[in-house]
Length: 229
Image (cartoon, rainbow, N blue to C red; front, side, top):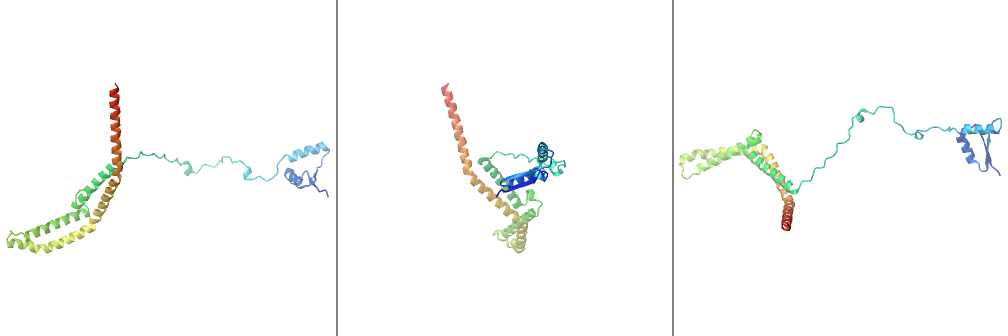
């Protein structure tokens, strides 16, 4: 059984005509109203040469828009270039750690004596008060136990010892509240610096040995050139 499909030349343009012809199994008849065959061919070329399907945004190439660029993007600047710093040698790192440890020891000594930048701080006041209380109690005990001193000369310091011990306990309490936390922190930093020095020292020694070997090689090369002359 022969199956043929017919379509009107004006029934939707080339898109619908293509659909109709693609579904026919045996043939497709195109019906057109015209004065003659040449007129029909001319109409078909004119009508079917224009696309009539719906336009989609994906069918249109993107073009620059007319809306201004937001200010936050206009003000954006490219990221600053990352500067790579040269890697420091183990010898330089050891020297830096040694200098840091010296500074920490100096700061720790100033803290314990209440001097330097600790002078007008609660920790500095506590350190000096503790030192004074310890010296007064030590002197009183020395006088009270002096075998060459007369009894009446030993009597006053002996009576003062209990009060001086109470004052020393109060000074210790004040030091624990204001000075001891900073002291423990500085001690931890000193310990960390010592560990860093111990860790870096083998590499620093190896670098030092390499420099010595390089200088010896240069010296030997210079001597050889001198002998060749």
